Length: 169
Length: 423
Image 1: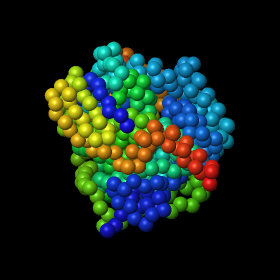
Image 2: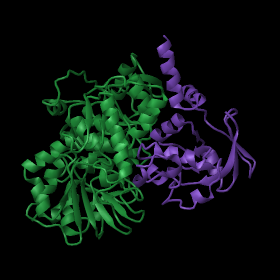
Image 3: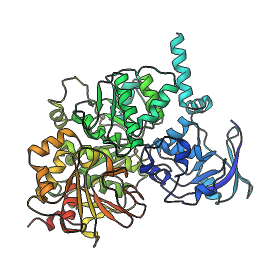
């Protein structure tokens, strides 16, 4: 996994998936179309200013509420390179791993990163560096089984391999 | 050391003697469910996985409930995709309004006897926690997880720590499962049970009807819980009688099971609860709501659209009128409930009171269709979430409450206690 670098966008506590993508857009399946409506009501300026590779930095319980995978699809299509939060809601966390979007739990980094800071994430060494201040944090690595899914690219590729192996037996 | 009911179910499904919180297990699943919002993504991933057949067409259930009946062409396309998949895979259970048995997924699966005690149930919907009311382990997942489960018949799960929520005391006549869970959410907060199992027990739960138990487990996810669960008892057996003849082996927590925390909830003094915008944990007793005038009342959903809920609302509304300026929308959660309400004259009560009665759908609950809110409007709703823009415009407001509070509020035009309309 390669090093990620981008500008930090900060969002608050308990940001639910309705805020990430509202229910009225759930009949859309086109990722780009979903991305246009990310954070539409709660952070209306985010989409216009967001550059591919930027990083979202959130408080506790990020992604709570609805199981809609559209939320992760939309964030990926927006160009989010990784998510840093104090904690994640569990379904959302699974969805991130399953779609290959890195969810990093690191309360210290969340406190130490301001909106607009340049942030570098090194998944191999397990560090988050705030390039604007020079402060470095270690993040909690994913459990090995989840690392395997991320390494395959996403859960779909992981299962594809498993199904193929079963066929060959 | 003993095990909790959740740990025992996961151990059994993983073919293990023992599991501990934090263990990651591969669990066999007994039932997998998806609906018209989440399944289209699952179907695409299922195909990308190279899968051709679901692991067992008896154990995969598809439900068109969120957008069905389709309000626009995009939704119609999504529903068609789900319907075509269900037929092509020969699924034993596909539900859609207008095609016989239908309804909101979390209402119709228990109603049709598809969920049994001890089951592991996965649903591509966060309110899958509902089925825990039958002593099953049930949790929500995203579309890709559900695609994998449909292909493999198994999933990975982290064994959760369990919270023991012990309720005692005879509650007041207006107190329902909705009030118990809203009160609990107020105490725990929306992240109070994150990643955990919420095990509801105690004398109050023992005396609670299945409809109320389903409501409580439904909203366990609003505290961030992985699952809500109530051990099977006589009430469960009675509920299942006539719905299924399949045998099951229920599991129970050991007396020395380990819990990460225990909460004692005393129910005698509890008052009807209302969750204010914009969070289900922002609760207060209805007497402390103040003057909150409203524009709409929604009675329905997987949380409170069952026949018991409609009876309570109809008892209050019988022979009365909805307040001028308030619109009432009543949505029985399944076709069977709709028919029951028709036979019992409940639908006539709602219609005569000036209300609109809809065919089963999730519609307004998630801001999809069938009665959304305009900017500045307020609704009392028996649904489960009141996030910003949940039921319409981002500047609208949703107040969550029981069917009794909702019906009383519809008559008075502001958030009201049912006692205010019972002369």
